[in-house]
Image (tube, rainbow, N blue to C red; front, side, top):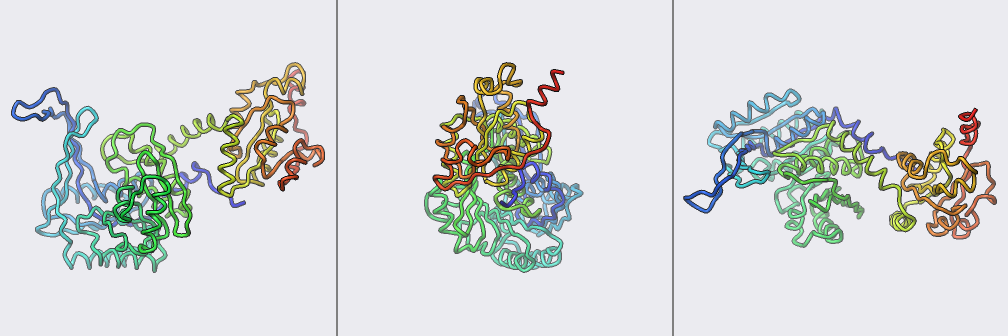
Length: 487
């Protein structure tokens, strides 16, 4: 079985990526205040301003997120010859991890978005911008920058906000250059014509953008797959990563694969810039050599964090680690399930082509022998279910004074192990009824048994399953540990 890194290990690999970003830079300004009355001049709220905050927005927010994840960034963008443009140049210049190529065009208006917020809600957004395509000389300069810098990059992000920087010829030239250099290209698309991003490694549309590009609904899993499939061939992309708000994300491959990821957000406070966080995290993960599936899981975690923050926020490595640890505690709780739930889960895994393994025991005082058994069991399957004897069952098998740890404690210790996917408590003296119900593909027991002595072996072999006898660790037993404790 190919070993897949767990999410915590994947997060550890993120720092050090070298990423180039090309796109539409803008200034995000937030005006915070309180609303206590309605204007006497018109039926509108009056906001009493308390504070203001400005930060890099658009492609600049992608850059901020990349920096927070420990990336080194080469950033190419265009600003106008105005005060907003000068502010943006100064703000980018303060970022030590960024090599900036900010090109100034005379007569161009720099983009700014001002959001008025009260009581945690946006009341109004005021935009000043231009959508005019950049000049020929500016296009040539961007293409030249890419040709010069791309060889040192691990990934290229095109952050398209349709403000005129990513023209058709710029997009075509830089994607072609990246393909030649074997650098993955991640595009956050704004155009409804995905063919203009032809050759990108991955496109990251939201549900609405995908629906408009495919000219069909993209609400359910099946609709998202159908819409993505309809546009992928023309776009010649390897993947579409579709962000679906409260429905999570879907990763669709050009090989027909489709994986759906449930939303990670516990509380949605502000969605401003959440797509930038997802794009940045996904790109960094790909840049560090993680698979698209693992990259999506990390990006999904980051997206769930950022919508719980206020303003155009970023997610850093500490945020990811903290969220992952919280997720692991929650996951440990959900690993301990009923037989009915285990049946539902094993059926789902089997429908996905995964091999389900099963082992069982009392697991009273967990010792190295147990850990070795479980690790060996997991090495033979994709998903491992552990049948755990109930307190009554342990007492019947082991006698008075056992178990040392009660049923919930033993279940939680097992659930904390990465090798275990589900823990099911059974009350019978043997797990036969549970084995017959779950019908595992692989049944694992210690080599102190023969195959003929293993409970459920005959039943598993009868429907084509396999019985595996795991090697034992000498000198390890709970009974011996209890005896030593009592002496």
